[in-house]
Image (cartoon, rainbow, N blue to C red; front, side):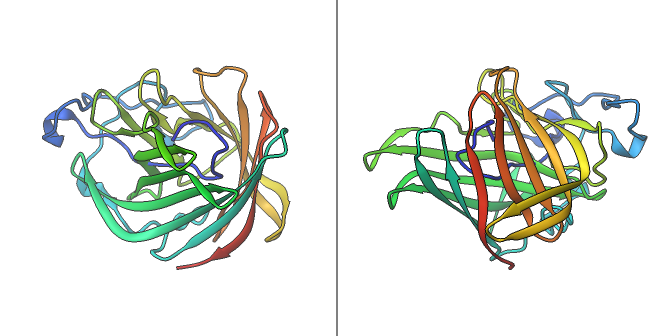
Length: 259
């Protein structure tokens, strides 16, 4: 998913070696995954930048139960997003009962619809899966942007293993301050990364007030001045998403219905 506050969520999955994937355009397996920051253990090795990362489809499940973003079918989040111009949009995020196979990995399909003035401005299907360690991976998205009710572009779409696109981690199994990782990589289109800042942050949104929140810094080399911070609450997921540099967008959780 591109760095943008068009919705308050973020996305998942890793990539498999091209030979194992059996589909064109995939990444080549690396013999050694990136070890990341000095504070990371071997178990915390996560993908970085454009580096390939070896993955085995047998290591993945559609049962996403990471406490910072559980995705049970039927779960539904409603967000309100505002910007400096005073525009307001509603974002509905729903975990469907469908799956999609990407590079041999069965992924959960999450439907994300953004509306402004009651009119759909973006309609997206995101693909997620969880590995055996508990990391939630983002495998890509099929997105359509609309203007005045007409399709404007599908430019934000990408799929791991196609045209060199690589999957990434949205929520690590064991977040810790200083941990950095790739969220997605599609050269020139989607190159988001994240850094865990705190496990004890505070968030106050219409849905409730929360402590012991995971706070992340989200960035992209495609827009160096754009920085977001996201706040994940246990057993719910993202409750707050704010742009701290390069804009002033703010998305807050209004309602949440668990699946």
